[in-house]
Length: 143
Image 1 (cartoon, one colour):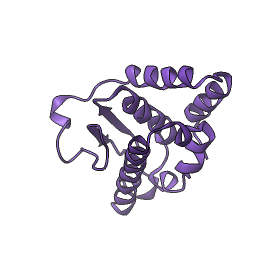
Image 2 (cartoon, rainbow, N blue to C red):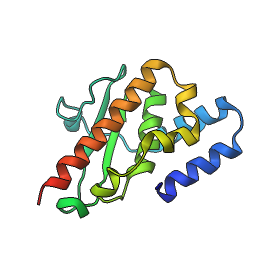
Image 3 (cartoon, rainbow, N blue to C red):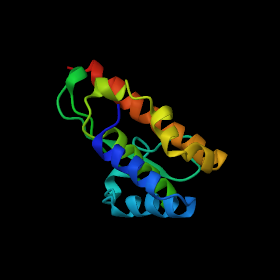
């Protein structure tokens, strides 16, 4: 259940056989994301469990389970900023109920990221996924 944007990343990863090239691609994706304004880099948007500084700002359109999930994010680490871009591609534009159906571990497993990230980065990625799921769960209950 991946978005077209995530499928594009998966296809690019198949084309890029070298992991250094894949890392560069992820970092470039992160660099292309717009930065968060200082006002949004606050404790309420900060993701705990990441070795780097990470902020995720939800921008939910609508209410209840059919609300559209959007978010912006930023990190002070280039590779983590790239991972935010990957998660953005995975979730952006789905309904909050569909966000909760995404098998993030399985989808990211297709990219082989877990095999090539440090334990700290893997833990941080799981923390970001959990934050996305928590935001979607909260949004699905509003209305």
